[in-house]
Length: 294
Ligand code: NAD
Image: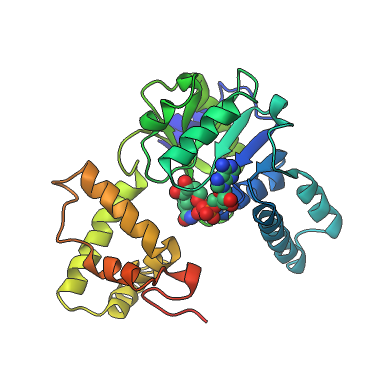
């Protein structure tokens, strides 16, 4: 897959200016990664506080580089200068690619995609960072579906190398090539996958979470399972991973996988995660999930 992705990107027109919609966990991460690897990026949100948080997150990551002696204050300011926070589409007329990273709500994404399409050049690529919504479904909201695809980053964006570039049934080769080239320029490892529930990574990950769930129902302690998987050499076990991903996100994605693959992914019900969700234990984002965070 990596070899194929590399051959796609050789055909692409380079991305000189990008934009990200949403300055949240993912949008802020994409803005940091793009600017720090040399592609200036507009970061659009509907809230000033979100833009401020996005910039502060980038600034914090750059400060860590300074502490480690890998960056100068001057270089930090240059990277921050590459991120242009905005509440409007005013400066979108020379954008080559837009990464949509607003909330995981099909109606909001559809309206944002239809809106941004009117402000970018006719040649621009629109890419969605959705985790669970069908790319073919989102493509219905744009007038140039051949220039639309998925660009699925993982959290935290600056640390996770993989990016799934998702081809919808109408996505052109040129669009895939440009998106792959942008991901590569950001220092990421893009893989090209077809649109389907869970794309590729979640199709691998969710059978694992299902097995974890079954063990919990059999009465095995989650901390013991985590220790076993760490002993096996994985950086973290399934309970800790669930807390990092977010229990709400996990339960939502589990429903999508069960709906998409009722036979393969069907299971006894992710009752433990559902109970955590009911108790508002959302994972690291609110300080308590399987574990408690100080
Ligand atoms: P988030 O809630 O942290 O950020 C979403 C941002 O979108 C907020 O700042 C919000 O103000 C902004 N927003 C809402 N409506 C908007 C609009 N109309 N225009 C511009 N901005 C708008 O969410 P997130 O975790 O960053 O997730 C964003 C997307 O990335 C979702 O589709 C999610 O499924 C996907 N994703 C998330 C993760 C993860 O681990 N958090 C991983 C991969 C993909």
